[in-house]
Image (cartoon, rainbow, N blue to C red; front, side):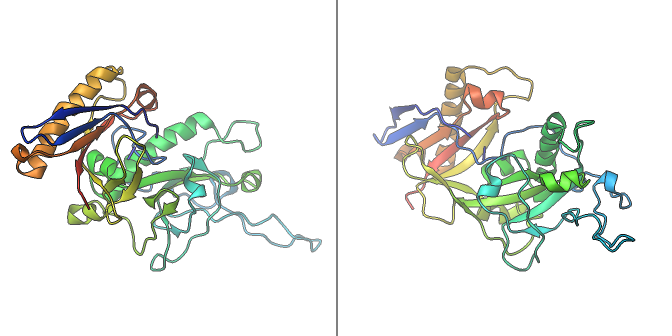
Length: 306
């Protein structure tokens, strides 16, 4: 799900007198739920041209005529489906140059490459990435990830999946590497990436989506932990709602809060099965800062009492 929190709470009573919590907060894992837009069909969004130093391939190191070593070997050009062992720190920004060689996907890993392409650099900079184009790349990655996971926008937003855009290190850029890749990962709890045992492709298709659902532990109005629902938790994300398109103006805090209150009361009532018995529910909504960053989803939560 989608970073930032502006925490306010409200209460109202049902006929049973049980508490209904109305939360106006957004919890986010970096890289998840920050961008909208359509999706394309190919996970490999970059060309697969013949190897050359200009398009991101890596020339092998070979001795020169005088017997000295040739160019330093670069990090291998990534392939879609490569599995990797990223760390929590590797995923804390939207773009990283943290190196991670591929590993076998049937062994424990934490990330998988689902898209790749050719990196644009600033002309005459010696290899400095074009940050404007990297922003566009991140949008492409988000769209490609929804397709890769096999769900839709709402299913992705409700999951604990996120992504990071990886680029070559400064040394590899100077040596001529010109690629980017998008890696998907999931968070078990803050500070811990989920250990994956197989491919993430179509992980949100059908019944398998439930194992990646987002829950929270603790009071909703006290910055609770986001966790996979297999972990002990107190609230479960039940639905996600897009509150505006990419070009829409922020409707205002009160308008968004009222819309989420009404929507979530109805949906969680139906989810609980017998709303007249009373139930607790909450919601997460985008703040103005989140909206400006591209976050357009609100989330409805049901109390689980697990």
